[in-house]
Length: 221
Image (cartoon, rainbow, N blue to C red; front, side, top):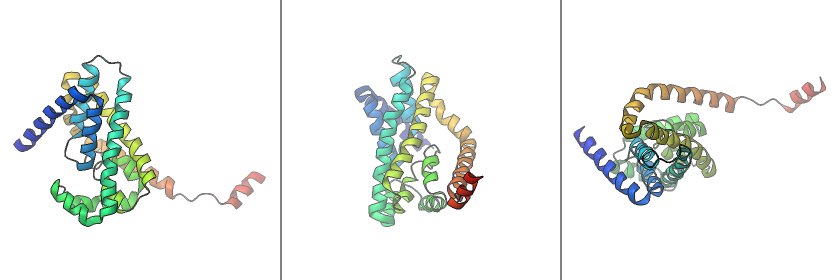
């Protein structure tokens, strides 16, 4: 736990320096790294951005929406890197990278099984689920999910996630570090909501469409 606190403090100091020098471009860079490796916590990167780059500078609240777009672009960029590494390198390369960034292979196996079950819906919903949002890039690449589809659903989910965390940092102000605690408390509700959305998506995507004959009969009636 002490080591994690040290790492978190280091990330925080680095983010503060990067934001001072680069502003929102620095946010995009750090979020790219977070999505490609899963190392840097997004609540630190985005919560600090909401406070430091919007609240502290007294920017209008509408900047939350624009900041969410900058961060989402970085998020999708990082996700695409891991997607293509997984797609081109296959499981052997993924396993080597997982050891380097300390990702348990069992988590990857579980993500693969869930992707095979839920498909595109998991990529969309997984973007707003802590612990899943960075892992989902791997099974999407291994399964050779069409890249444009991956890019589209990742952008939508990432924009929602990034905007919410930046907004939370703006609202909490200097207390933005409470975001991590709030996320832990709300995690069961987030997971339950995500599963519900996936179930609805699965039902609609697998529901048989009415045949032309049925439609023709209805029109004649």
